[in-house]
Length: 432
Image 1 (cartoon, one colour):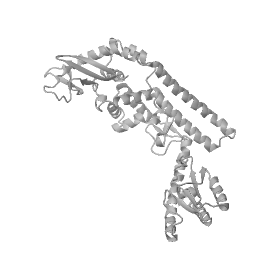
Image 2: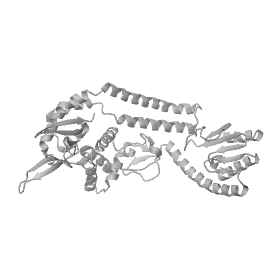
Image 3: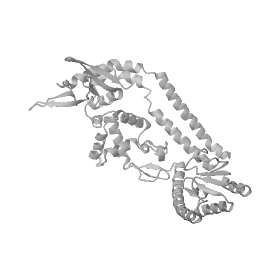
Image 4: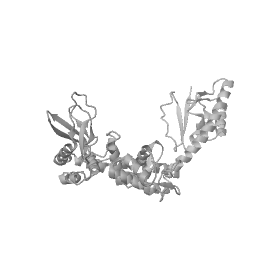
């Protein structure tokens, strides 16, 4: 008993199947990529020495139209070959009535699948040309000739949104700011999508998360985008509302005695404008509960601890190793870009045809974008100099609460209050 297998792969939509996944002992495998030359070779070989069985995944792999699929099935039947479609439970050796009914049903399904495939092929060709995907254009852009172009009337709104978020590190605040200044009402969820949307960074995102960089003019710079990503990662460790709380210590302080997070409370005296701020545990299980501590005392001790310990913590980092990682990413990007520049030469000399060159270009551009994204997540190079600058007490005293909040969360993971009878001390835990 002789068994052959045949598979057709459209390089725009899928990858070549693993030859070991047929589930049968196969004597010979015919594989086509883009064209069906191997299918024709199968028919030629079958006329001289036909197999007993031919395995395929789905019937539509035998042709691009229902007519071509039907002709291929008829030719195989004439050779006496039993056709088995393993993903469609079709077997041409079944009884005639049952086989005809199943085939008619499958031909209708094939017609629908091929129409869907043509649509997906059109989208895939657009991806190879870096044409924006179908759907609504992101706010701040409009469709141009094969790419996004900046909408001069709405892009300032998006730019202002990003600048407000970077300045105050508050997503909800940036959303309220747009509504108040421009009358542009968006939800917090929409605002978060704006912050992470590759389009505003000059990139285009396609299916499966594939991104091609530098396809159009950006609204924010690469440096601003990297800072937005760092802020979002940092805020993800905090409760949603403390991420945009007005006080710089909000969400950072934990009581070492009861392990409860501490919240900022405000106390006022009737008929007086003065207010007093305290940090108290949110859910202390002890009885009596852990006492509140004046906010300004914690703030002063935190600033002193940062000025004393931050340069030592940064100095302990392995910067040579960090530089090695950055250099590794940069060299990998340079290699991929060098290969990308050679594609046109290989196409001109006939080594690559136009379709293969497009596929290779698309893959290289997505790989470069992925490497650039990893490079952007690494700490900034000037971390050591920044640590030296913020170790001066006067630096912190000259900042507003929102500015102090920005720098605290850039360096601090948690502040723990260690209680000793009526006394207490702080333990500042840095991110690195």
